[in-house]
Length: 84
Image 1 (cartoon, rainbow, N blue to C red):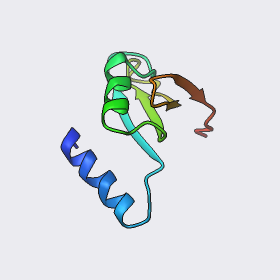
Image 2: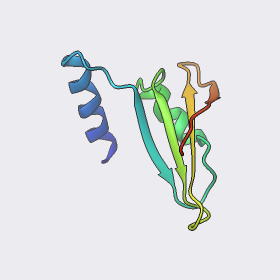
Image 3: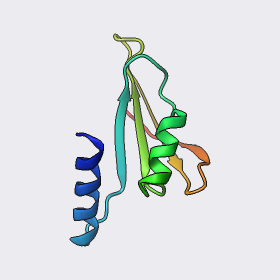
Image 4: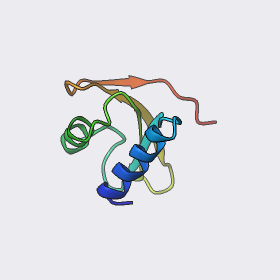
């Protein structure tokens, strides 16, 4: 989905009373950590406060999945997730 589609889906979820809890995306060539662009998008689009799941495909045979909380001020804190 592009950025406008994500915004529309998140807004609809909030309106329906079923607020979103997470957003996810992949990094095809870099590690599973929010980039400066990811953080900027989270803050500017009011996606801060959601869990951010980042999947790295840098090693094609060994995808890495990590989760983060991005605050409204742009702080990034990793969260533990069990992917097994």
